[in-house]
Image 1: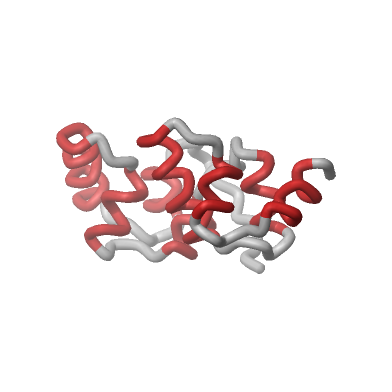
Image 2: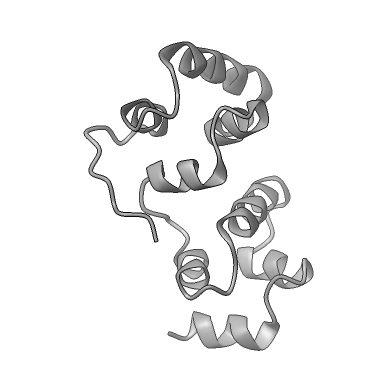
Length: 117
């Protein structure tokens, strides 16, 4: 488990710079591409190979998805699976749990047990 680092900024780009994972030039390029493509900032950086999933995970603010966070913390899904499911959720509008089950990453019984905790 990664140690929780304290960041002075709530912005993911600034957090990645603070951690030494991203340069200011990469930040500027990623922000421009984010505006052009509609991709998330982290997606742009990952696609360029500037950061890893683990580095992104370390610098992300606390998650808003409670079910996703619980599944991740309990080891049922990986950060990569959660990230991909959240991207799909954004484009499809489907519920996160439905996407995780449909992809075969979580059994329905496990989802039900986690959602009631």
